[in-house]
Length: 149
Image 1 (cartoon, rainbow, N blue to C red):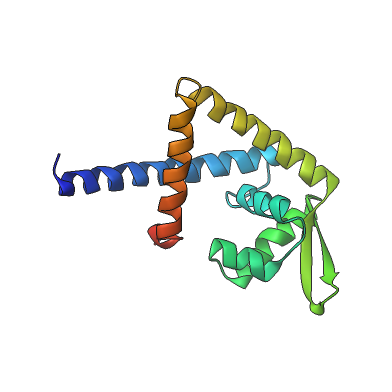
Image 2: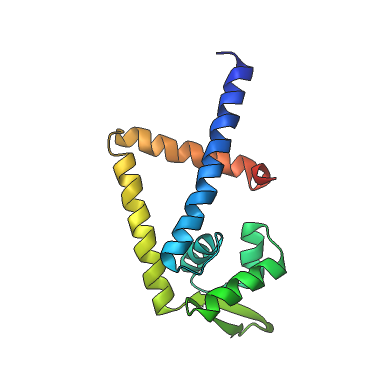
């Protein structure tokens, strides 16, 4: 396989991974709550990992504007999955955190998803799984969010 063919194969597989990933995230969002849009699952995951996070940090992480973040967080807040409070360091800003219901719903779906990864990779030697994780991390560090454009 030539270098060009190898790069085309990587591009093709990454494109497939992105298409499947977008569809899967939308499905996972609906598993958390039937009214959620596709990006909600990912936002819940970021908030869960951060604990309490500013809206601006959410926007920066996902490379989306303030209006998109505000709309998504408002929807999550209306159905009781996140709570918003004033930032004690800057009263003009808000901090977002998961509610107990939000954490329970998100973690239930995430744990199910993790179980699926466990099933998919069960036949791989642990060294291959670790190498795969390392390669994905290195690739993500190189690309940031630029491949979505």
